Image 1 (cartoon, rainbow, N blue to C red):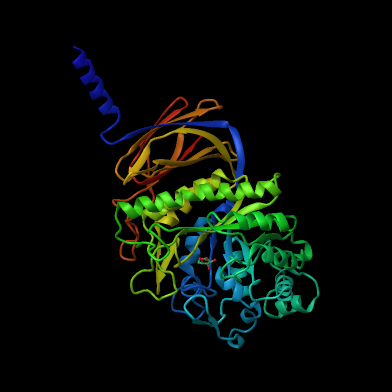
Image 2 (cartoon, rainbow, N blue to C red):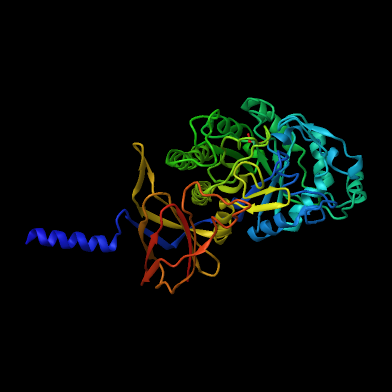
Length: 516
Ligand code: AHR
């Protein structure tokens, strides 16, 4: 008899939880609104590197590739859809060797220079200040301009800012007018050096702090533009840099940066392939991407020491997965494919930054087109949106919303003796009171049964929209021949019962739901 009861209990459990499914309970406190998730967390980074700009964004007016004033039409349209909030430019390492005067004036008069950081290729400077700022303007994105501290001078930097931002009658503002732009652009975000501990000048934190203060002094708020001054921070767990630079110079900065690249392979020398990988590179990619949480906490703790009021923001202005380059690609061009794994890495990274949105006010995926974890790939006149693009599309619902407090009791996904959480999520509330949920199942082998309990609100009305991103394999990609292999689909595998929402999340998937 006892045996029969056990058997029927087991059978009924199997009906509710299909074989392999895991059980997860999440409480969302809809009345506990935490920080605002700035739309600027969903920013991009476009460097003069490989085909990140040339070929990827800029083809010139005379190109056979359809373009609007020299910018690829297909790329513009794809970026318009994402409502790109900001773009960081011209580097990266390139920023600390860039001379802005090379990139203004008639194209034919612009010099050929050498991009010594990225492949020693000739840079014809046809994409310069006007081309970048007009591009951001067309997209309605804020420009984030990284200044040359490594090989430049404070005067050069100050002149560039005056050229871009001054509305009065100075020679530099008039030069801008001669070059075709009457009104100043009002650039609000200025980076003072990039990786100044490495490619940006190999400085130590004491030296950089002094230099930062010297340069920051000459970042003027021309014509009423209130400039956000961003100091060069460190990467990963190098907290001492943050500590010293905050101690010495935080009174003169509005933000400090953090760079974190996910390396799925064993080391920088063996970063792992971006195509045709198995579960090991999948698991290690996710496991390492999750470390962003620890690094943001570590840097934030050091910042808290000198800035407990959180006046200074943390800008994660380079992040993403960095793999070995594609076989046969040009050395120094950092070309890699982009798979469902990378889309999941984007989802969990964005969740982490949303969670820390009290301090993280801007982030920039590295990079926007054709370089590293690109949202768009191009080849000649062909263009494809990567799986990561679709995560950025899904997550737009969180722009400028309130992060909601959540408590989770979730299962783990294990591989090779190590474990990571199988679920990652962000819940937010927008100005209209709609609750948006993005939720990722990291487990590539099991679906997840998730029960969400919404507290602190009257009964949930309905789930008004549901989308999912998934694919057959964690290494599934979009190609020019098959651009729709990994795309958003409608999702309705959920059930609302009062304030409880049950979802069956397929393995390796990102789901977005909107509730009213
Ligand atoms: O994104 C590629 C490079 O990575 C950037 O130029 C540099 O800042 C970082 O090391």
